Image (tube, chains in turn orange, green):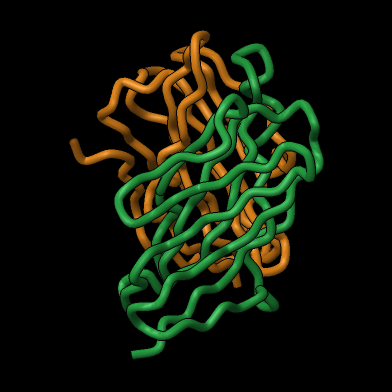
Length: 115
Length: 117
C-alpha cells in the first residue's frame, strides 16, 4: 500500500489564485481529513469526511472547500488564495469504526506559499 | 491542542541511551492515545497507541506508559538511534465514531528529540 499520497509537495501561489491540493489513500479508509500545520499553532483541522458524499467543517474551514466523490480521494480547494493560507497542509485518513479506535495515517504534506 | 512549533521543549540524548518523552492530557474522559513521530519535511507517523484499560504497551524499542490518575503519558525509546531524531507528540483522538468528525485529533505539545552521536 502507498498509504496517503499528497500532491503537489510544494506550491507557490499569488494572492487570489486558486488551486486544488490532492489527497488519495489506498487503505479503504472511510474517514479522511485535512489539517494545516503552522509554527506555534500545531495541527488544526480544516475539513473532514466520514465517507463518500459526506463532508463537514473542522476548526478552520474558511477559505477552503472539499468534496468526497470517492472513498479514495479527498481534494482540498483554495478558491482565492490569501497569504494567511501559507502553511503546510496534511491529509490524514483512518478507519471509521465503532468497535475500537484506530490511528490517523498522514501524508507527507504540501508546503504552500502564498505571496 | 498545542503542538509543533519553534519553541518546542528539546530532549538531547546520547546515542544508545534510553529516551523518555512525556505528555500530559486534560480530558478525563479520554480513553485512547497515540504517539506520533514527525521528521523534518514529513507528516506525522504513527508509532504506538494505548487504550485507557491498559497501563503499559510495548512495541519495537518503544514503550508507552499511561497514568490515568495524574493524566500523564510517557514514551520510552530504548537504545536511542540517530534515526530517532524527530519531533514527538501524543494525540488524543475522539473517543467514539459519533464524536469522530468535529472534535479534531488533539495534539499535545511536541518534544524535539535530538540524538547526539
